[in-house]
Image (tube, rainbow, N blue to C red):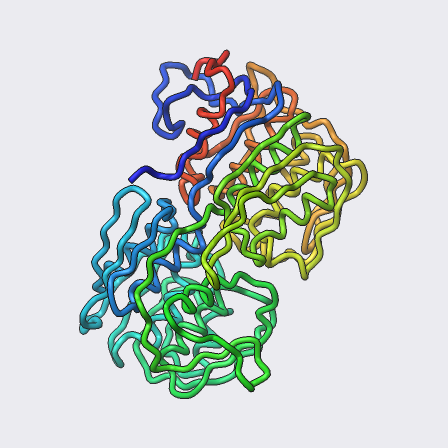
Length: 476
C-alpha cells in the first residue's frame, strides 16, 4: 500500500535536492545544509503523515482488543514505533506494510517481567503507566525506560493519580522520572479532578479504569485531545459520564471490540505548511485528509484571528469517529493575536510555529498559559525566544509564554558563515526554524536535521518535492 503522499507544488530556491531524504543524502561538499527560502507563492496540495496521537492509540489499544485491529494511514516515526514495539514486547503480533498496521492482541497476558524502551515518546510511557497498572497480572512487572531527553521529563502528574487508586509504580532512578517499574495490582475506581487539562493523564486514567473495581470518573479534562475516548467508543466502550456529574466515566468488564480505522492527517504537522503559506505572499495551499477533531484545530482558529483565510473543504468521517477534511490556506495581511491558557490544549504542539507567524503580524502578539512547553522534548519557550531573537525578531520570553512584536524582517548569516540555530534535538524546533527560513534574509542552517524523525521522518524530503522547478542553485 502506498504511504501518504507529499505532493506539493511550491516555488522555492536554495532547497535540498529533489528525489531523496535529506537525512540520508550524501554530499562531497563541506558546506553546511542551508535551509531554503521562498521566492514565489506556495501553491498546490500536500498530504501530511498520519496523526501521531491517533497512531499511538492504535498500537496501544490494539493490545486490549478481542481480535486483530487494523489501521491505514498510520504514522511511521520514531515515537509511534516505540508504541508498536512496546505492544510487541507485551505479546502482541504486529504486521506493518508501509502505513498499514495490524495489531493482533496476545491470547494470554505476560507471566514474566518485561522491559520496554519508550525512546523519546512521552505518550508511550504515560499511557502505558495507566494501561499496565491493571492489565498486567498481579505481581508481574514492566520496566519502562527512555532516552536521555525523556528521562528528564516529569512523570508524577500521571503516576500520582494512578497510585491513588492502587497502582503499584516505583521510580528506579531520579524521583518522578524514568526509568520506572509498573507492577500489576488490584485497582479500585475513584474520581479524578485534573488540575491541568491533559490528554495523556486523562487517557492513562481511562485505561486503568478498564481494569478497576467500580467506576472511574474524570473531571477537568477541558478541551484536551479526546482520541482515546473516540477510539474506545469505536471499540464499544462507553465513556459517558452518566449521573456522576463528571465529564467522563468508565467501568471495568467491558469487552473491547476490534477496529478498522483510517488515521487522519496530523494537524500539528500540517500547521508548519499552514504557517508557511500564511507567511509567503500570494500563497494558496491545500492540505488534504486532515483531522478536524475540535480538540485539535485550535491553530486554525489562531490563523483566522491573525487574518489568514482558512477554508474547510470535503468534510467527512465515520459517525462518532474522527472527523476529516481538507484545509485551504490563502495568505493575507497578518494581524497580531493572543493565545491564553484555555486555548493551549487544542494547539499546544503548534505554539512554536505560531510564534514564527507572530513575527510577521503588525503589532504585539501574546502567548500565555503555556508553561507546559518548558517540559516537552526541550524548553520550547526558551529555545524559540532565543532563536527568534538571533533572527532579529522583537521577542520577550515570559514565565509561561512569549511576547512578540512585528512585523520583523528575519535575518540569517552570510553565504560563508550561515547562522546556525540550535534545536535541542526537538523535532518541532527544527521544523519551525525551517519555516522561518522561508521568509528570512541571509543563510540559515540547523545544528540537528535528524531530530525531525520523531514525528515526520520525511519532512526535508517533502521540502525537496515542493521545489517548484526541481532545480537547486546550491550544492548539497
